Length: 298
Ligand code: ATP
Image (cartoon, rainbow, N blue to C red; front, top):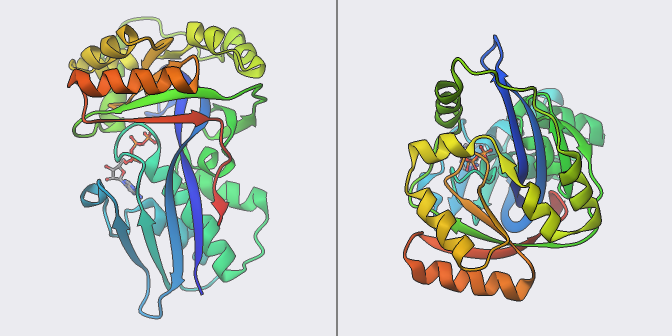
């Protein structure tokens, strides 16, 4: 018997970052949108103990040891229910690795749900979300999906209404960017300045609620973008190429280096993707839409 869970990637339509706290974390106002790029995690009983395997174009960059978030999720659930995590987790990976699209977090949420179904723990939804929050700031959103505002370190979620489907192109860049390195660069760039408290933009929340792509395009904002561009200046060329190709707006996704382009329609997104592909500025492009549901047992 095995259980497979499908889990989406995310884009931050707003990522407002506060000053570094004494514990080194940053307060965030983080508006997440789940988009239709998916990993699938399959949990199968493994009498020999916990084992992780991974397939897909980026599989070589995924750690297969206990640092993998999927393994940590299985261990956390097993510990809570006093059992051994005797499970084989296979990750079929389509979300870019270290791309700022929460791929590792997605696998953590998917593994948790898959093991929960396999082991029939009877854990409640709030309990699963509590384990998600312990695993990492972005993990609860991967479980919930749709659209949500994350505050605190990003892990305190309020689900948001979305009045339509938004069409996106994602441009994948060569190599990853480390999220902690991007936050350190943010700290360096903002040193000595007055970093405002992070708050969700009311205009952005209204644009989401109305499903208005033009209004959303006018309000997209990522406070980590200057830091990502500082570490990877070539991302500016990709952003410019997408905007020139007709995207309504362009931004770095999370900590990057994936870049995101909001488009007026599915047809417009196909056109932007074609032009971006031909521009030679990025590794590959993906066309998708959101919001989509969170981790789901197949
Ligand atoms: P975020 O958007 O949440 O900041 P990200 O999308 O930039 O994250 P991930 O793909 O989650 O980045 O990977 C970041 C690092 O986490 C990888 O370089 C890898 O070493 C580690 N990692 C742990 N578990 C996984 C996993 N299941 N899949 C991918 N990377 C993982």
